[in-house]
Image (cartoon, rainbow, N blue to C red; front, side, top):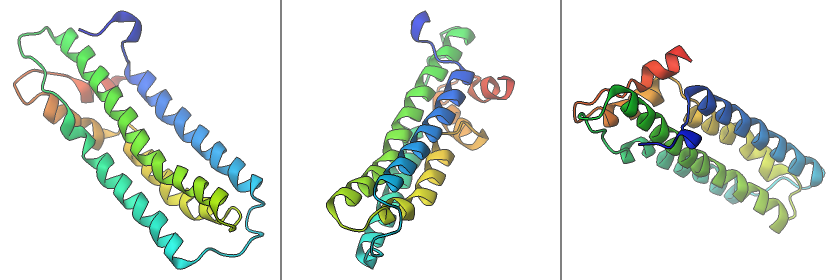
Length: 166
């Protein structure tokens, strides 16, 4: 059973997703500005391909996170199962965030290692932020997938309803 002090709510998960998207955007903008934007040479194709492949790999792993959920016990009360479901979903959201952040950090590292100014960050920013927003936002697709695993033993997590009501 989740502890009262750390119990996640649907609003908390939404706020977390928005906050992380804003922080990541601000961080990428800061790095872009710090390396003088696009004043340097355009990076070679191999670097662009590596960054895009990293985004694809991150999206692939993020898409598989919901499969790691543990089914809820049908013997538990509905309230306990709902709290456990939100707790598991919050953990999955954090894992998706980590996967989607990794390629953007790789682009920041490329800014430091190579002499291409802020180009690597600019190249990865739009697709990277799109993947992060899509994977961490608790929309119907993400909550339904997680709920399918959580409810697979017959328990009712009411995960989707938690986000519809909040």
